[in-house]
Length: 319
Image (cartoon, rainbow, N blue to C red; front, top):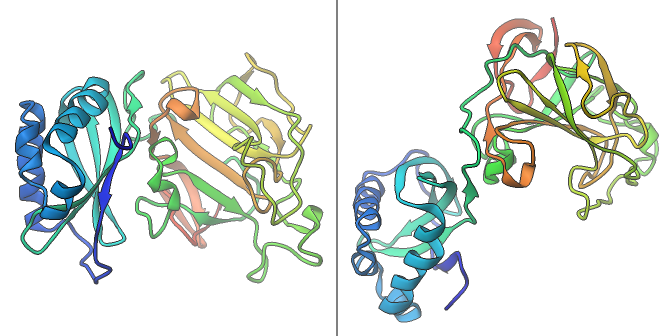
């Protein structure tokens, strides 16, 4: 049996429009019906010749039965949300999990590329967005380096667990630091106070992770020093890359909106001091499905916005 989730990708690097194409929509409808009926031979017949030469009918049948449906259940919905390298990307909600499917068709509308990401189990209800009122967890004006609902604005969208997450920097005159770029202390964000965006309970803390020299990363400890808050609505807010030994709260502690939590750092998988902020439906990021995080009332590029989701290149601050 070949790789669990990678079938084959043979696509041309041609230009493409920015919305789902009708031929893809039609094929997705057919694919969903075949998958839910257990007709994996029917899916095999959707392949182009290259796919059929690479994967036999039996391999295709076993792949979808044992490596996909057994883990996921049936497809409940397939929603197009972006392009990647000319292919359509669909976020797929199954009975038991969520995954992304990357799909490419040739000129005869046959499948010449198909990639299914490892599924995220549905251990908790999927959140669309927050219902708890939020403020920004930072003081003063910050710059949204990554934020938004598509990959152009927000590279986090590629990963289900972090989809819609933010990376926030402090910027002055177009730069995030002054002086030697290898000194973390020269970055405007480093050491800035991080406050509670809402009322909640501290349910997870990671501390003691050294701050990186800017330009270096620590992929073994992805989020670095971390705080996770849980709201009364079972929303989990993750704040990552905090300064080593700066955390002021303890697990199990109740906090109020605006309370001091920690300081911004450069720990974990971070190339420069910034705050990674995300909303997720469960405690552990590896098992989570990300959700959209809106702020109740903030200043955006000098104007007051209500119930706003910041996007890339916004300058934001609490009202």
